[in-house]
Length: 455
Image 1 (cartoon, rainbow, N blue to C red):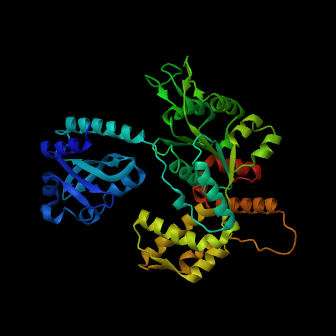
Image 2: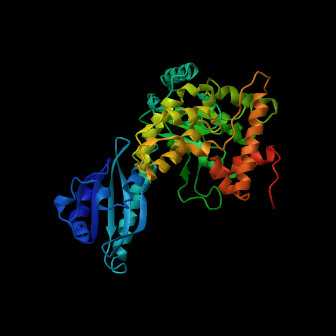
Image 3: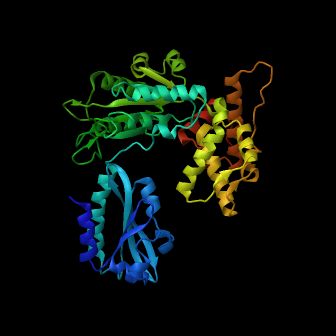
């Protein structure tokens, strides 16, 4: 089915359709006569223009950045009340633009039209959702630290062995998922799907169905016709099992069978299904310690740990911070459409002095926050005042006295969690969002550190 022809038909055959197509830069490529009438503009003043100049509150950038369609939102232009939808346009696995359309005039008269359009849009949305692609490449792994460069080079070599299982370890925010993306995109599996599963966020009773799928009638509420699992959807490609240390022993046993036999069996199924999938697993937990505590299966550990990559913490490669900061500056500028062009030397020095317990993820969040402040001031260069919030955060000073790094890190983490909890009046969801961790992870840390919650 040719989507281009479908769009042209919608443009020419439907008098109720206000529609346009933009490219990946947000430039308007095509627009319907109906939409021109709504805008009260001639075609010459619209085609080739940035969409934000024509409709400042457009949703096309959100749709293109997420790859997800936005369906049935309210849209008002020049007293026209419309129901709008925007879908991404894909080519060779890449988002190359967006198609936005609106239904207007009297809603009741257009009810059947709206239902037909949304049904067709949902068909495209299902197609988009079925396209799982890795977003990052090795160029996104930025840094010249000797240890970091060795790990990056090793990962590039691993990419050339598309059947090898990989275990990526390291603290939260060090780039484990990014590395998994890069390995997939540099391998011969790149044209096939890349699927990510966070083992910590999916309830135990749903994880098996999510990974292996189910047949119709397998359980109460099972979807008619059944549903393929992530291993089936990833066939030919890569499945990334994040937070593998959070997986229960029972699920570990089932995963081991899949790795050994290269086949899965759906819940309620009677026949095994062969799959050809590379598994990349990641964790910020100490799996060796979990082995000793009988919380992780030894046979699964050795099956996963064919090749191991340990991502270094940002505090271990502070010489990379200036390069990372400038890389993130460009990345955030593109995402937020801000105009911050540089970082002052004083600001870089302040960034280098901070310990970054949240690693590169925390650095990116800090850059985003500071860039928003600078953009609000119409300032093109980040200065220390835009990063003032770092001054209130504790840093460790290295002394000549012996330091138990693990204990010191845990003390610091406990202090930060307690502080943010108090600041947010012990609201756990808000605290988890502030700390950039999953709510389940926050619960575990509160229990581990015996932090008292205010009742």
